[in-house]
Amino acid sequence: MDIRDQKNSPIQAGDIVYVIVRNPHAQDVANIQEAAVVRDPEQSGHLNLFLYETHYPLNDEIAVYRTEEEAEQAYQYYFGSSGEGEFYG
Image 1 (spheres, rainbow, N blue to C red):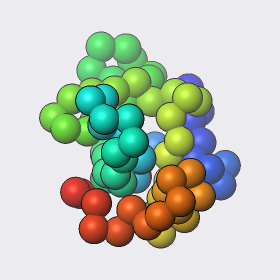
Image 2: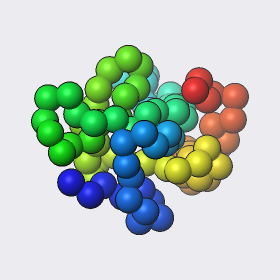
Image 3: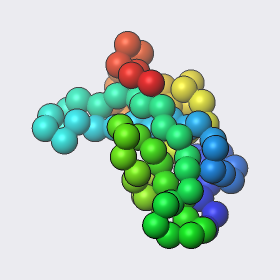
Image 4: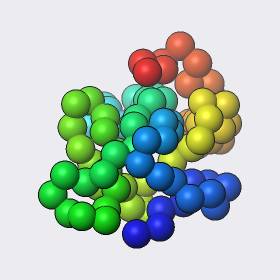
């Protein structure tokens, strides 16, 4: 499986990436979170995001950013204000 980030670079196990996470209890609250890319422990050849001590499938539905700066730009675009101060990585 070849998952790519926003700049179309291949994501590999061992990479540290950034994602924007929405609070499931308050949809108007989101923050930038650092996540590790790891091999799926249950499906050989698949990758997961390891975030909050949990494995999440890494697929084309998740926006992944290589740098915190890229994630900040996306946060600003989608939420209209800086995610600065809301990063919990």
